[in-house]
Image (tube, rainbow, N blue to C red):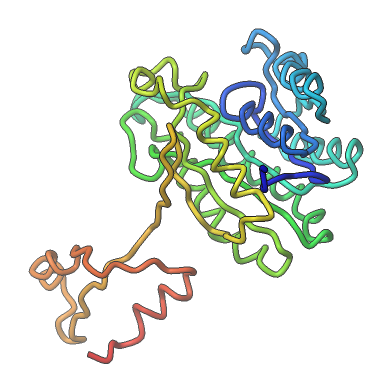
Length: 301
C-alpha cells in the first residue's frame, strides 16, 4: 500500500521535459496528481518553439492513465510564469504543488564569462523560481495549502570552479526559501529545497557525470515527492538526495567570541580566530531575528 498519494492535487513542474523534472512529473502523476509539464525545449531537446519535450512527458503520463498538460512558457519572465499558473488553473481548477526545477548552465570562470551568460543563468534559476512562486502564491493562500520546492545545488552550497553564475543563483534560492517559509506559514504553504545529485542532460557533459552513473533522477524524485506531500509538515528544509542517499543540509553559526567593548579591534579578531572559527556547538537559526538575538543577548556564563 502506497500511503503517500496526490489524488485531487495539481502539480506544476518546470523544466520537466527530461531528467529530474520528468522524473518528478511521472512520479506525482503515478500517485494521482494532475501535472502541468513545463518545458521550453522542442522534441530534439534544443530549439524552443514547439511542445515536443513537454508533450512527450504528457503522452507518457496519459498513456498510463494519468492527467497532464504541456506548457511551453518561459518561466524566466514574469508573464511566462503567470501563463503557467493560468494554464494550470484553467485546466485543473487549482494549484497545490510547484516544483521549481528549470535550469541552464553557462560554465566559465568569472573573468572569462560574458555579462549576458551570468545574467541568463541567474534569470532562469533564481528569477524563474521567484516569478513562478509569486504567480502561484495567491492561489495557495486562498486554498490555505501549498507545497513549493526550490532547487539548490552543491555548487551553491559549497562552491565549484567555473560556476559563479550557477552557484550564486543556487544559493540565492535558499535565501528565497528561508524568507518564504515565514511568509507562507499562516497559509499552510510549505517551502523546501532539494539539492539533487543525478545524471541529467545538464550533468552528462561534465566530468562529474561519469561519477553519477548510479544516480538516476528517480532516486531524487522520491525525496521531492515526500517534501510536496501532505505527509510532510516540514518547511525551510534543504534535502540532499541522489543514488538512494538522503541527508539534510543546514547553515549553522558557531558560538563565537564576544570582545570586551574596549578591545574591539582587528588584532582581537586575529588573536581569537581559532575560537571564532570553532564549529563546536554550532547552532541552526530559524530566522534572522533569532540569529540577531543570539549575537546581541549576552550569555549567562
